[in-house]
Length: 334
Image: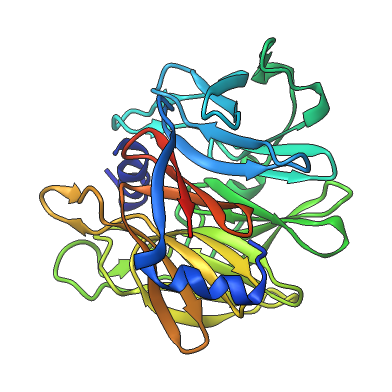
């Protein structure tokens, strides 16, 4: 099994606020975490729309049962799009849908094999689910696989996305270790390469892949969180900054297995730590965290999460976080 496959098998098995209010999430003693929704099948991405409705991407069980669901205010899960690819690849790992993005009335969905789906949310009805095969879809896998990367992994795995200037979209590719751009006109290209680094442990390959995960645009640059590949060493995951010319540099380092990054206004960002990894057991349960990042470092905001994968703000005092380890969505209030 190659190192990138191991990274994603471990994962799949297992925010704009007011300045004065943002300070309060820095104090973990004041945070209340509760279970909001349960019974999800591989929850990965979360998104809200203009009406405040919460959407979740579920990777499925490997039986082509990936789906997008809407979670109502009472915590009930209502599937709205079903039949997404969810497969067990030859090495036995799960490959399914990843993250969601809402923009201009459209819900964008990243499916397996680097496919981008989109649907007008006004057409979605929890009482009458749509089928994934009926959505508009763009398959970008061939373009990325055919690209002549200096360090070619031979893989592509579009994982997360954000809107940039001029209606262009930017994607993290956790397989190719790259940032992919899609112009508003629908033209795709490789925008930036996220570098690997020397393995600081005696276990695994000499070089560790970056595995870019979350991405945001903060007005003049992109920030990209990284998971890092096997052996998932602690304290070496990096947040990179990428300028509009595609130049990559370190924004801040010293993190562990980052899977998401969110923008806040006080100044700083919130990142999600998936968990702490150790052989032979793998990722330890309940070692996930939400951390606040400022220019001076990072601090714990929420601890004890079970393999969290995404964080989404609902209002000034409420966030939702998907828990892959629990098959649930947690509500964070402070």
